Length: 416
Ligand SMILES: *Cc1c(COP(=O)(O)O)cnc(C)c1O
Image 1 (cartoon, rainbow, N blue to C red):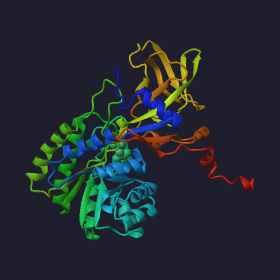
Image 2 (cartoon, rainbow, N blue to C red):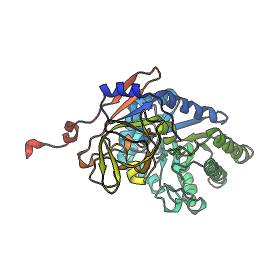
Image 3 (spheres, helix red, strand yellow):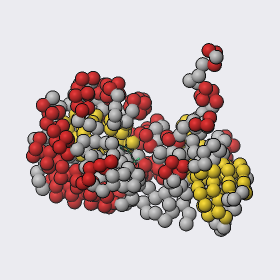
Image 4 (tube, rainbow, N blue to C red):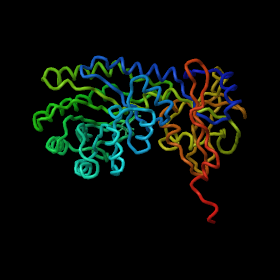
């Protein structure tokens, strides 16, 4: 089974003449279409809907600008991410600050921007008050613990470092109300790269039920229910995309039953989806530079784990297309590897592919989220460029490739 590409071999060859491999390229048209699909799916929510794009997934201001034009806000979790959102011109209410183990300087910046601060722990109430003051709007992150079954990437909630327990969160609303907060949000995120629509429906039910309990026990209206991120994407060609309309429909049933029928505040629904918005719309373009025949067959490419860490870190599958050989039989078995002195620097292990020749262009799929962003400089590896394939078919450089000067920029050789 093959995965579709938004460009032809000829197009990519032309691009490579100007921008040498490796690079990531993002498909603007598809990103916009996905953003619109999400907005449309949640149009029914009485209080409104917004996705706060998880900036960590693809922290590039040009992509953020596109998502902002499609009505999205930004979910940030560090000072540089807050500054990125500020540079893109996002106003405070369009920024969610969902962080954990947060230094106070970051709370101060979030407060100054007027961002929606999402607290991760009950002790952070006092910490925030002391260092930045309690804002009018405040949100807290719930950790359902053993109430909710885990998901394979994020793990069991009771083992996860995030969020308040139920007792703590109810206490938290009481304290925050007393300290003068006026508007309240509730957040949870218990999955990552989850493909089962029921999982999100269950999470929503859990939160909607808690909203009723919070109203009853703390006397607080929840105006803003944040379901977090974690919607998966079909990395493997035989997996199916999460039907966001189906997810939304299931959430709607619970919303009607647990919020509307109970006469609770008609809360806004918010998500922090990153992967599902841009993940499928990015491609790492690399070239085969070596072949090696030892106990196994290897193809060495000019990208490495520094450009895409997921396969090495999680053993994650990323589909590979050998450009121009889509119709050829997959009658070779290769490990496709980078050049790090780490044996897990492999984009694919025992992958069935068409015969690869040196110079072939290799496309690694689904690198639009948690791809370039997770890059690093270990082994003196430099991060690649990022390109945008625009709707009109032209290409824009949206981040240049790192140079050796960038790698040296924090060193002072003159004091040797
Ligand atoms: C990572 C993260 C997200 C985004 O997750 P995706 O899997 O990219 O949707 C959203 N919210 C929080 C708090 C996160 O840590």
